[in-house]
Amino acid sequence: MKVSVVKNILEANERIAQENRAIFDEKNLLVFNLMSSPGAGKTTLLEKTIAALKDEFRIGVIEGDIQSSQDAERIAVMGVPAVQVNTGGACHLDGNMIRDTFKEFDFDVLDLLVVENVGNLVCPAEFKVGEDFKAMILSVTEGDDKPAKYPLMFHESKVLLINKIDLLPYVDCSVEKIREEALKVNPGLAIFGISCKTGEGLQQWYDWLGEKVKARRNQS
Amino acid sequence: MKVSVVKNILEANERIAQENRAIFDEKNLLVFNLMSSPGAGKTTLLEKTIAALKDEFRIGVIEGDIQSSQDAERIAVMGVPAVQVNTGGACHLDGNMIRDTFKEFDFDVLDLLVVENVGNLVCPAEFKVGEDFKAMILSVTEGDDKPAKYPLMFHESKVLLINKIDLLPYVDCSVEKIREEALKVNPGLAIFGISCKTGEGLQQWYDWLGEKVKARRNQS
Image (tube, rainbow over all chains, first blue to last red; front, side, top):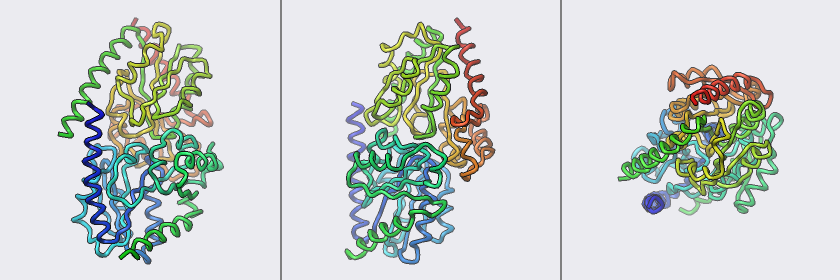
């Protein structure tokens, strides 16, 4: 009974996600859904990425949080359109919440839309919002056992950013083990080690993402 | 519709949690439910706490994870009974999963049962398992904006352990701000700053917990 209810919720969400996707496709807009545990560095990564790419691409952001609007405020000061979604307790974004933001954007003048999910290494991986791909951050402070313990998110993501590598001297964590375990779960995963604090590794991520945005735009 | 389904699930869980609680009460067993984001240090805290208190109290552990059994193995080598629960995808433990472990324990020879929840700063706070109280860990690497962004867990917990304070020189995080913001959400919250790596602050936690176990045992 409980399982069938959950299945119905997921199927209803899938339909809405497909409708969202059709709108993004029509506008040749690249959309990715950024997920991680709380405090792994999603908003900071977006600040860095926007600063690096906003002259080349027109970027918009949807900020998902259970409550508060501080993340959207952090993004809005960078001069890009940012809409805060408060889930009011819910542990993930769904297609419906994303659709509700569309009236706030003009997709004709955007190349890239980033959806920053609620900080949660579990539930957001189950829900599509109409994105081209999912991206995830794992911070080295979380430990190298996480791909084995939270496999779905690693399985569903196209790219894994291993963040806070500047803290490696002070924590017991092997980046090599994260890579190995993550690739066991998802052999096609693109993986970048980064530090949003020192900037290390970020250029590779910008290049990877930039290629994706260009390829999407060239479909028009 | 969706709301009423969720309400029914929570009510059904509440009934099972009360039944669990009646069993714990009968055995004068103190039970706490330990929650945090992935990688904040729940299992490491338990290792330290068991080492410090196992000569004085008889301790058992239920390890909750989506999958894998490495946490229960880490605890079992310490010579205390440990049972692994795999949720098979679910993002939190519920009363039913805890009840299913009872056949593995002899509660007559235990003083303290610790339930380590799935790593998730959102969903576990909504589900009782029959515990006397909830405890939570926030690591300083997660940032000092978390009480405002994930208030329910701070609201539902009786004690907050601010972990990894040895990393404070290397991260942008104010323990004082965490304290202030957490107390706004829950003025009765007990708060300890700790480092499971250096041992700083742990004695205060052991003393606080030891008093709780003794008080519970004296109710017999």
